[in-house]
Image 1 (cartoon, rainbow, N blue to C red):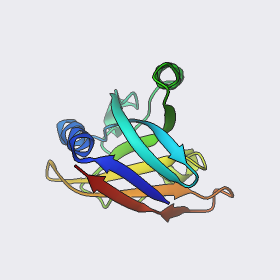
Image 2: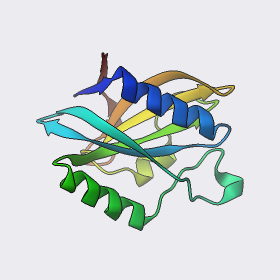
Image 3: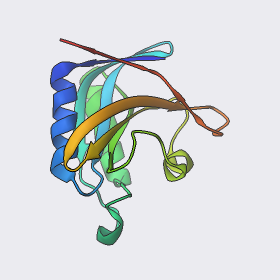
Length: 142
């Protein structure tokens, strides 16, 4: 699996993740799938609605956010291909919580934010049997 992301969109994700620090932040990935590969065309940040005292290590959005973004993607000829979020002061590796709440075939970009600065970004996809994530290649271009 290869995920292609423009530098400008990567910068937007970094900015959103840093602004959310020390809490988790996240949003949706809109793009075009091509077999196992995905090209990200837009990123849309979504407010973290998890309980305030847990936001430092949990992120959630509402079903209404999900439905609204699917509609927006359709209107633009794009697909809701995945989701991105931060791991404050933790590696850009999916947690057990991430696995338990992820969907197979979705693209997940995780950004590690250390001391308020985005330092690492990795891409993952959950296996169909939900046993684990597999890491993909994140190709960042101009």
